[in-house]
Each structure stands twice: as C-alpha cells, then as structure tokens.
Length: 144
Image (cartoon, rainbow, N blue to C red; front, side, top):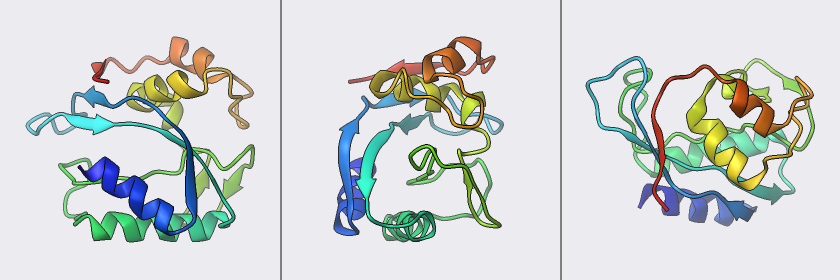
C-alpha cells in the first residue's frame, strides 16, 4: 500500500517510473524487535534537480504519515535517492550516491534486479560487483 502510494505521489510531482524492482522482505537492522521491512528500487526520470527531488521525496513520506521519532525504527515509508544519473553530489542535506547504499543488501538486491550493470560513479563498480562484495548478513527475500 505505502509503496504504491509513494510511486503515485512521486509521479504527481513529475517523477516518471521507468522500471520497478520486485518487492523484497528484509529483516530489520540494529533494532531487531520490530517487523520486517518491505523494500524496492525504482529507476525514474524527472526534470527536477536533486534538491527538488529530495523535497518531493520528503513530501511523499509526510503524506504517508512518516514519523522520524526513532532512527532505524519502524516507519511507514522511507524514500532514499541512491543515484541521480552518474552525478556525485555532496550537499549539507543530500549525498548522492547515497553514502551507505553499497553496504546494504536490501538496496543492492533489488537494484541488481533492474540495473545489474549500472556503474556506481563513486567506486566505478557495477551493482552486481557491489552485491557480490557486500558483507551485510541481513536476510533479503524476494516476494514478487
């Protein structure tokens, strides 16, 4: 429900979905006494600049009742910008590529499904290479 709502909310803000990975069930990290998470990855196109895209993501999270009470705790929705083309962006409120994406199996698994040969502009490695190298032990299960 929240994933569909997020895609619709982003679309209403000028973010067009090109490809969407399957939904993945992921065990929680750090705070283990919480439900498992649902994750996916989108490839999208937009005329928004990175800062505008970040604002659009935050608006969609808020519309879906996102609370920021507990870091790494349960949440209705968490939208991250992993890449913005091949750009490397370092701003106070935004880092692209996402600074921890290559350490997170729950990002790499769905990303490898839709863009296995995409080159991370920071490391120069493909998503498939990063997935093979990741040491994250978290269980990530493809649902559909």
